[in-house]
Structure formats: C-alpha cells, structure tokens
Image (tube, rainbow, N blue to C red; front, side, top):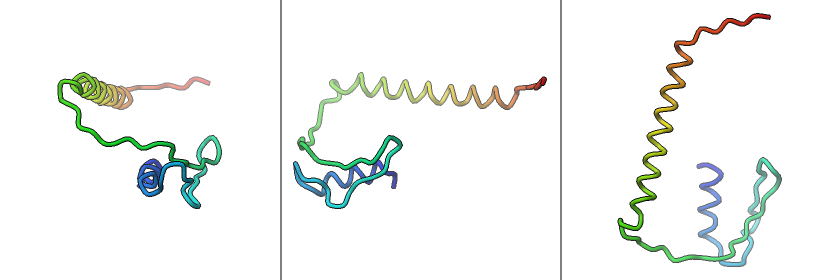
Length: 84
C-alpha cells in the first residue's frame, strides 16, 4: 500500500471534525496530521457528463506512453561522447 492509499483508507474510518488518533505522517515538506472536514455521498454520473474527462485521461495516458517509448528508444540508440 502506498502512503496515499493508507491516508485515503484512514479517512473512511473516522468521523467529520475528528483527528485520526495517532495518525500523522512525515512528508517531503514536513509532518502532516489529517482531519476530516466533510463527507460527500458517492454518486453515479451519466457517461455523457464524464465523456470529456475520460477521453482526456485516456489521451494523456496514450501520450505519456508514447513519450516514454520515444525516450527509451532515443536513450538506447544514443551515442554520447564526453569531452573534458
């Protein structure tokens, strides 16, 4: 489990305005204590409302994969000469 997953799971356990007992973590920018300030009911949205977000997400994923492939190939085929 990643730290983010643990934080997300912990937020379901305690109530609004309560500090998770003994729960805090040391992040890259300091120590963090989590307090749940609000809850929102889960809802299902229609595909028509989510379509743009889904398409954008998939486009970004595809672009990221293409860039990773391109960079990997470029590194494999690169001939670097260091002149000091």
